[in-house]
Length: 207
Image (cartoon, rainbow, N blue to C red):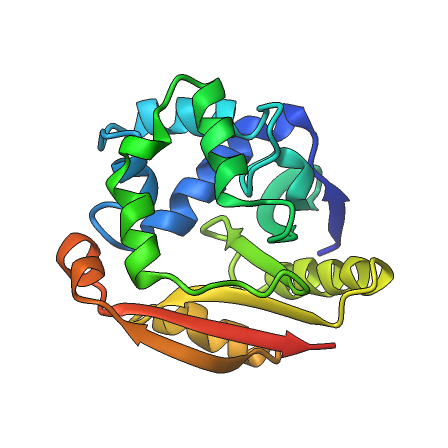
């Protein structure tokens, strides 16, 4: 089974929306975009996420940040990587504004100010590492990560980070298998109240 890794294009918006929602829900009742879009309707959230991948402001959801894994021409996995010095909170708010969402009103941004981690602007951040059900354990995530690290090295990066929820054991285990190490753990009551997870873990890899 041959895995092809390619850069995402604007036409990949429906698939990227699916992967972003899958990643942020992660077996929880609600995810961050339920909060941001103030709805739990999947169809509405997916429509908004599709638009968010194609805004002029290049937020962490922008298609240009993504690699896509394909098997036999079918999109089966995704991984985003972005630079925190470019993809800022303001960029995200601008992108939301473009699709008619007032991000300043979102409970999520206030929550992340309390519960999140300040990211080093000299590192690369990985996000939305996902694969379709039915394609687990065939090496998709490893292939995506390998290509992303290669691209990061070519850009001059030597450290990458990612943030995982405390309690997301499979995701945590997978990142550790790929060589990531736990740097900090932050338990946060407001996060637990909303999402049912105790808080967040910051992971890092040097390459």
